[in-house]
Length: 418
Ligand SMILES: Nc1nc2c(ncn2[C@@H]2O[C@H](COP(=O)(O)OP(=O)(O)OP(=O)(O)O)[C@@H](O)[C@H]2O)c(=O)[nH]1
Ligand SMILES: [Mg+2]
Ligand SMILES: [Zn+2]
Ligand SMILES: [Zn+2]
Image (tube, rainbow, N blue to C red):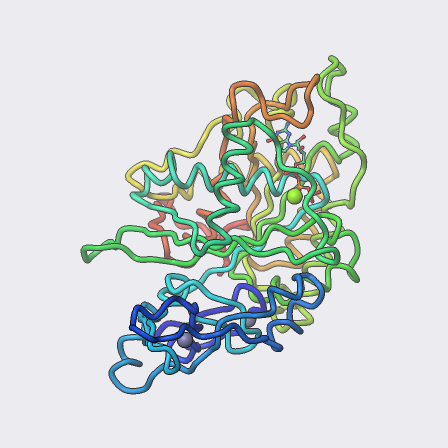
């Protein structure tokens, strides 16, 4: 039985229960008239003023057919004929908010990955580069394939790739949810099954919040539903926000340091509070949603890193497995760097608030943006380092990718407790 989580309102429903939406296509029958659009009040009130009124007019919804039709549609992969016009459709809709759900989204379990971090910590750049890496280098290592699902995600996926990889333009500031409706990006990740032939599909939902919205606990409340539905959270930490790092970096006329934003410590504390108030608190008040905390822009830290630092090279992914020993090396390295930068304050708080937390370090671009064109990617294009690690760790915890365990199974701090 497939459970679908609506990526817009986060309602959970059995795939077989989702209504179909008629797409008002021509019937092909002589004299047959296609369905007319009608106002979808439920969807209109859900999106509020974010959509133009014309968008409230949608094809009629109808319940999934019973019997054989339902069996076939049970996996969500089905199609059903509109009882009014007789034309088959594969488009489904959420029971609770009537948002359209692409049929392939409904055919597999969904995993929601929430992405948080202060303004300019690198979230949008990270998503764009991560998707590209999952398609190419990482996809190759794990025999994985990634495809955007639905018209909306497909066109945004294309735009992201063209902007960053062809025009070499960095993403602009993500607009706050109050001024518009920030849609999630839907992808289908296909991984080989270990025992049987064929692939196992997972719907990955990335939600790139605007850093602006995470400034205070109040404005973060907008993302509460999304955070509490998440299977894993990636918190990006911009090291260039830390006073000790700013002081230690050589002044060599590189790109200017970013202006000061919300401290990662505060964002992490607010996320923990939100999750606890939504029943995600476990033993000793620690939140049980796995949290990957990644220091971004590690390219800018090169003068401060040992030349042998594991942060400077990608994980091995040997044999298509996520290397746990390598993850621990990165975790320890990042922890000791943080120790020097903020006396370990962030890590102590993370340990107190989250039961499964791991530290990472990554660079989406591989080198800083050119100082004469700060809105551009480096001339050579993004040369990412370790962007995939946080997501792969989260997928590994859910048993979705194979993990190579270190020879001795320790239960030290920082190892997944999930
Ligand atoms: N050196 C370096 N700078 C980076 C990297 N990734 C992002 N940046 C810089 O950080 C800036 C902000 O990146 P974004 O991806 O837009 O950050 P964001 O977290 O999405 O910001 P908001 O949407 O405002 O919340 C970029 O314009 C770059 O200047 C990186 O890998 N290395
Ligand atoms: Mg952004
Ligand atoms: Zn919904
Ligand atoms: Zn119809």
